[in-house]
Amino acid sequence: MSDKPFSVMIFAAGFGTRMGALTREMPKPMVPVCGEPMVNHTLDLAKAAGTGPIVANLHYKPDALQDHLQSRGGLCVMETPDILDTGGGLRNALPQLGTDPVITMNADAFWSGPNPLPQLMQAWQPDKMDALLMCVPRARAIGRTGPDDFDIDDAGRLTRGSGLVYGGGQIIKTDLLADMKPGAFSLNLLWDVMLGEGRLFGTVYPGTWCDVGHPEGITLAEEMLGCADV
Image 1 (cartoon, one colour):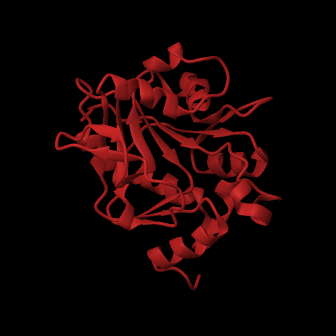
Image 2 (cartoon, rainbow, N blue to C red):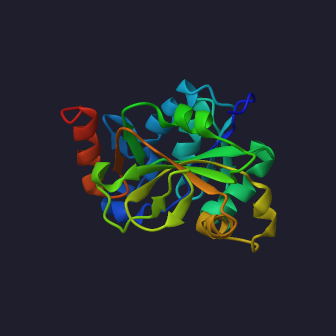
């Protein structure tokens, strides 16, 4: 575990197309869940874990989201003219994040149980890990519609496979970003490099997780969190 607080990157630039009409007038992180913008759930987890600066990348309908994040102490990085995906977005935010390993979080991931960030920070071993992903067993991944992402061995090393879903939270080193192509790219490309070197690791979340990337996920998350009547 690092003695220095980790900077946090929240991915918030996407178009939210799976949300349909809900994102015609607002970016997905501002869509209400339990009566408040969904990004608040992510912000609260980061602040409760005692992290360092919180940075978010913005692109689609950014104005209201920028005002909201800044009112809560967040830093914002605009992606213009093009959206940069997760890898390009992380690289673009490095001037605000610094060069040390960072925590990245998806704004549409909801967690019921312990805060996942202290678990990540306590399990982080930079001497053997280039990234440490918070993974969720498929049986406890509510609202997940796509295939599984990973399998995990007894040492915590990940391989592409079945059984675990990536929950949208990780600690990742950023030095390999300099070797990636210019412009937009997914962090999956960086993970593939780490997989090939045996340096991609995971830790398994003990609670329940919900994907709120689609409208049905809002109801599922509110039921999971016990605020369905809000």
